[in-house]
Image (cartoon, rainbow, N blue to C red):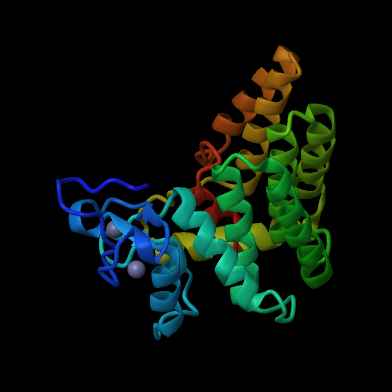
Amino acid sequence: MAEADGDEEATCWICYDGESAGQLLRSGCACHGACGLVHLRCLVSAADASAYKEEDDFWVACPTCKEMRSGPTQLGLARVRWGLVKSRPDSDYARQSACTEMAVAYIESGDFSSAQKFREELLSVDRRMHGDEHPQTVSSLTNYGKILSMRCEYGKARDVVESALRTVEESTLCQQLEAEARAEAAAEMDGRACPDGSLTAAIKMELGSIHLELADYDKAQRHFEDAVGGDAKPSTGAGRHTERVGCRR
Ligand SMILES: [Zn+2]
Ligand SMILES: [Zn+2]
């Protein structure tokens, strides 16, 4: 039973009904008080009825406080959105975005095994659509390595992320596309520093973390030093913002 902040009966901020109309969930954002509790189906109806329903933000962030959702509403909305778009073609943007959000929501809920299935799906779509040497595929491969690491499969994770590093270091096509993407990002930032690091630096940071887990401290140190020694600032952590802006589409 969800609790209201005061003595009043807990109600959903969308339909004003209480728990009798369905389980009330915390909104999973910065809203509290009268906007703190909600039925998942009410959020879904609001999302589905919106003119913005093809836009990512509508499904992943609260329209009121703009904060990215967390907890049961995050996973609940991700599942509903996935159900709505999964039969679309692989190339559909909303489908790819919903697939990414499923992986992110499962990671945040600690269900790494379910997250892995969505990472595998994203990787196979990227391979088919872009080929092995595209930075998008390399990024997807690195994210797949990350999930293996989260599942404590460090040996496999190392092999996967090392192969991602080999591609960015050896593929001319990958380097060229990555340079174009960075130039485009820098232009969008209008000369200000780009907040995200290069793909190479992000991969080296991940490899450093994996080698730490494998107690291979020399290699870990070398990867971390390489990552921060490059001309780009490495991205830190596996946060959803970093991933959205830097590694996904
Ligand atoms: Zn409701
Ligand atoms: Zn909110």
